[in-house]
Image 1 (cartoon, one colour):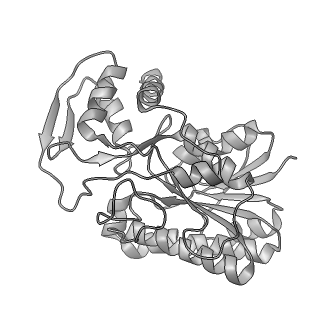
Image 2 (spheres, rainbow, N blue to C red; image 1 turned 45 degrees about the horizontal axis):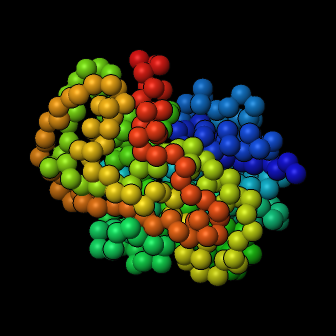
Length: 316
């Protein structure tokens, strides 16, 4: 059965992969994006496009009248550093915009499944066991993480009080083709571009800080499964939240070496002073996604980095 799907942020790095995944399944896909960071050329040709902001009345009207079976909500203010510099703006977009969409789904009266792109790194903080599981304590270190967690609480409210069908996907560090160099996960795009330019890579501190890098194609598949799988009834936070990562910690130094390997050459790494407050370890346990969504990562880091490097090389 063909579904009507709306992907907010579908002109962005991850959202465009999500849109492609639904189109490949034969679904009708619309993309909503204000192009503040997304690119019009990222929108698949077969998708409808709406140049709108998620905080706008027009975005709400589109959802109320669009007849959507699924809303995959990826549009966001995505820069952790910007959230620290201007937390009010971050909240206006990431909380206010999400509430605008949730209210529109409620007002539509449809049994629309709302799949939210949360965060598996920023939401847990530094004081939990790694790899983190979904029901561990939440202690976000940034306004960005606080906003994502706030939206998950609002989703629980809308599910309990208004019967909305909501799911949260907590991403690890997503990388892949079409990535822009934003935030910590953007280090893959940054490194690829510097290697192609013949520049030396720079890491902060000793380079032993770890992250969990998950390929964009695997994340797109997680969105599809989250949108189409029968799930336990939403009663409280974490019931319908799923970590999406690999469960593997990779140091920044190992990441640099692997990218040099994808480029087929050796290279050196410069060390810059450590950044104050930087999270030292981050990795997510994905056994719940495997059990309830039938999702596991399929692309290894070496394979994914090779594909990503080839993408940037083709555009260099």
